[in-house]
Image 1 (spheres, helix red, strand yellow):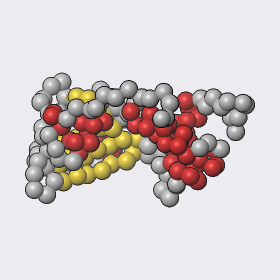
Image 2: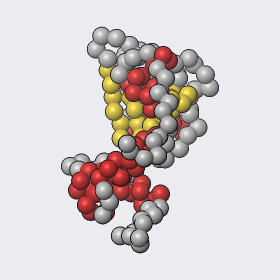
Image 3: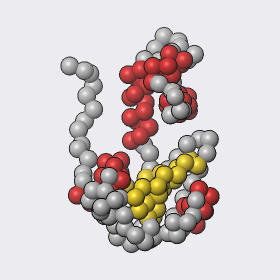
Image 4: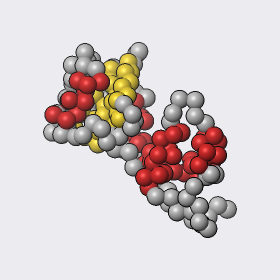
Length: 162
């Protein structure tokens, strides 16, 4: 498709290929075959896409009766962010054990609801209505761990495999 000696894939095309791996029923090997790329290269593109993803947490509780469109309006008004950019938005309820996430996957808004059965989420300090989390902190937060104590391991990417 984009072959000419050593392939140079434009970022826009990489994003489309990675998005295809997120389709229901899609497998890495099938998508890689469709585009003529190695599965390990496609995995690397997915890791890079995940690293660059923005995660915004609303620091003040919201009305949990709101659904997709209501949360998108809150992302625009309360967080001053565009909800259709792929940013993951995290909203919390007054009850500390509940949260909703919202993001645009390129074809529609996706909302997930999580309720902790026996614990509560570590609440962020209330500041300006929003705060950004890194991937590792978000994973800890979503798991119900104290995300404030989690720091990503900083390791340089190797130039070659040994």
